[in-house]
Every structure is written in C-alpha cells, then in structure tokens.
Length: 159
Length: 159
Image (cartoon, rainbow over all chains, first blue to last red; front, side, top):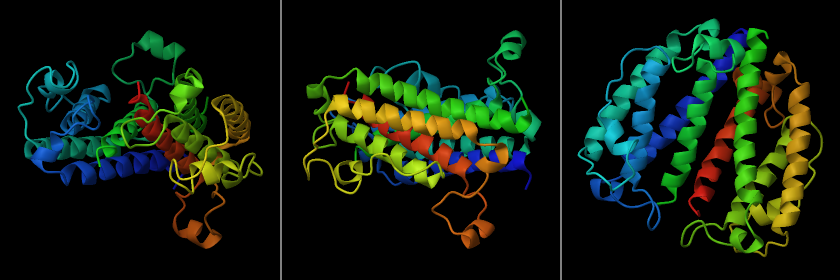
C-alpha cells in the first residue's frame, strides 16, 4: 500500500467502524424504543438516526457520486426540529434507506483515487477552493465521521 | 502542499476544530455548571471533560511524544465511573491541564512526517503491526477525534 492510500485506508476504516456501531445500535431497537427521547426534552432516537441518514444522503451529490436517493428525509430530520412535524417513516423503512445510502456511499468512496479525494467538494466554488484547498472530499469524509460520532454519542445515552 | 501532507492537514484540522469547540464549551462553564449531569443519572460535565483530558494525555506516550503529563487523572476520569470517587480537580485547574496537554500534543503532531504518521503506535507489537499496518499513528488521530466528538455531543446535551 502506498503512503497516500494508507491515509485513505485509515479514514475509510474510521468511517466504516462508526457506521457499523451506529447500525448495530439503531437496528436493534424496536419501533417503540426508537420513539423514546435520548433524555427528557431532547431529540428522539429516531430523529437522530433519520438525521444521520439524511446527512449521509446529502453526501452523494456533495462528493459527486450522483443525485440524492432520499431528499424527502430533510423535512423530517434536518430542516425542522424533532416533534414539529410528523415522522412518517418507520424504523424498519429507515433501516432499508440507511443501508441503501451507505452502500452507495461506500461504492463511491471505493472508486476515488488519492488525487480525487483531494479535489473540491461540490459546495465550494473554484475561487474559494483555490484559496482554501482543504475544502476537499477528504476533509468532508473526516468531518462527517466526527458528526456521526457526535450524534451517536447522544443516542447511546438512551440506553 | 504534497498529496501526503494534504491528507495530514485535513486530519489535523479536524482534530483542532473538535478540540476548539470542546474548549469553548467547557471553558465557559462555571464550577457549579461543570458539576451538573448531562442528563438525569448520567455523567457530570466535568467527568466528560476530565475523561477527554486524560485520554488526550495518554496519547503522548502512545504516539511516542514522551511521558504522560497527568497520569493522576485516570483514577478520577477513566478507570472509575463518575461519582464513585471524589473529583479533586477544579474546573479552573482542569482548564490549565487540558491546555497544557493539548499544546504538547500539537507540538508532537506538527513534527511528524508522512512516513512517521504511518508508523506503528506504542500499544501494538511489531508482529501485530506487520499483519495490521493500519494500527498506526494516523489511525489513532482519527479515532481519538471521533472519540472527542462522541463525548462532546453528549456534553452539549446539558445546554
């Protein structure tokens, strides 16, 4: 393995292990358990799972892998706070969507070369990227891994 | 910047931004606020901060930067659960320790070359590392960044 690919390998392992532990946790919960709040007055578990799923879905166009698969998740899990509008997706359905999105992401990740990882993501202009070359795909991957860990830590408090 | 150094730059930016937002949050709290639980029956905020500080301290020998600066933190914040033994460090003292450790880590991080980032960390044997070359310093950095985000997400629930 080259030096470059070793760095990418580490980052992809980090992503995958965080996805897997979140998956094990969320997938094992019943529909009733998913509707519980992580703490009094805080988000419900299903909201955090839906939020992470929607944010992962948005990575597809951001990283140039294609269109979003489930933009309908945003109304429920991103642009509105929990309990302000009805969640119309079940845990069982969310599990299918979550798997579908994560598989598409993994396929996209696996095809990128080292130089492609360092290319700009799709929410930064050419001009801004020239000044701030760290706004690349690799930085997005690391940032989203931390975002996943952040909310997973919260979800685990419900145990 | 070379391809290799771009990957390292992304990871160090991720580390730094997670440290900074944790620092801003914890440092702004009063001694009384630090003694509050993040949710009923859960860890107190100072426990999470002390835990993150102790885990960062342990990175110094793990990454070959030198001896631990504050091994005394482990009894309070790592090897025992919150409230099982008295916390004898104040928030003000913890802030100094946290800064001291993070500055030492940053000095160490800044000196590593690309190939040194991919060398084994000090808790893996030569034999195991030959089989599992991903058990290197870079993977530790990414893992500890996610660990920081995980507990910071929990601490933020106290807001």
